[in-house]
Image (cartoon, rainbow, N blue to C red; front, side, top):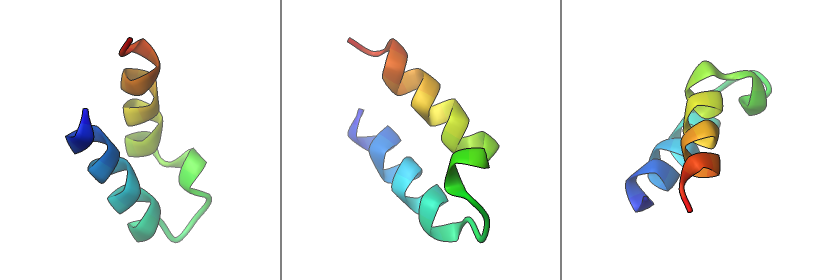
Length: 36
C-alpha cells in the first residue's frame, strides 16, 4: 500500500503534464480505489 503511494508521488513529481492524465497515476489510483 505504501509502495503504491510512493509510486504515485514519484509519478506526479516526474510528470511535466497534468499528473492526473498520466497512465501510471491512473493505474495506481485504480488500485488504491480497489484496496479496502
